[in-house]
Length: 423
Image (tube, rainbow, N blue to C red; front, side):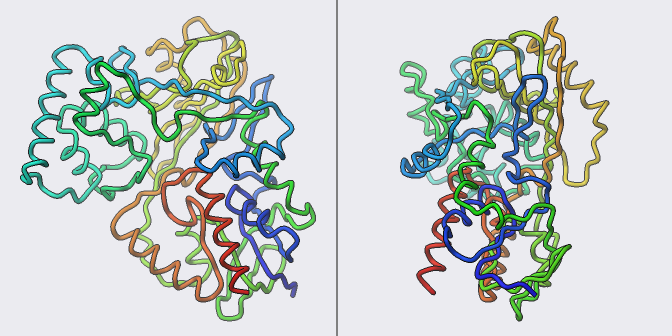
């Protein structure tokens, strides 16, 4: 049996950030895939650079950004985001709720009317307290804004009824706006959000992964090795290749998959999620020249968002990522969906007489976890149970939460600091 002070499971951002923070310590990193990176892997075909999906980095902590940049040889693009909503063929600035004045007159009046009386009900204490994400949308923005964009778009993204999600399911990432802000935006545009400025490397998101991995001894990273079981009492992990006794285990494995691996009793029905099917597409010439990504709430279109790598990298051929939300139990027909994607891209005018030169697809499973009152309570309780056996579950999927890539790094560093301080 091998022994290590720190066993890290998962070589994505969370796992590698943990390993980098443990530089010089005795550690082993396990990655079940044949290469590191998690969902930040980068694909190159026919001169196109794609990730598994659009992974763009925005930072609140300058020291983290500087640390990463110091370890990245590739040139880095700093981008001021331009994103839009396709509203029945008309382009509306994002976020929708702050730009309803750009809608056709009748739709604008409907949205403003419903918004005003929703706000009035809240100010007068007559609004019903929201219990779900859908309740929150209607209570805060009224039926017009909700039905025209917020509900259909997010139901395409989460592939579920928003009434099942917690009212704060998106946390700080949801673009809230008060009535006065929305009115002011009609004359003084300010559509800034948490990712208003982001960075993206010439070589794709994998360059950020490589920066983290540069602080980890290559011999400490074992790819193609999956965690099979964990004996919590003995602090022993079994993989598909060996048995390892650990001091601490740090896991970014999806929480609902880690629990049975550790033999922890739980109700699997508490944890729901959805998949996202991503098509990366490369064409022979440019398309729309301005957007970095566009949102599509129309339920008749198969995708909910289309991103333009070429407008981020400044390249001369259209390079897209196209995202489609699927339920957790869906088995997509890739060929049929690919055909539908191309047809819908023609329908919305993104593709015209373009020739498709290269393509790639991936199913992200899980993609978005469904945050509910029950999941919040069970994650808190069960993470505490695991930590009592020196097993620490972190990251977007390990924490069963909605967070940014930078948040994963912050969390990993904080956990390592805590463990080292405790001895």
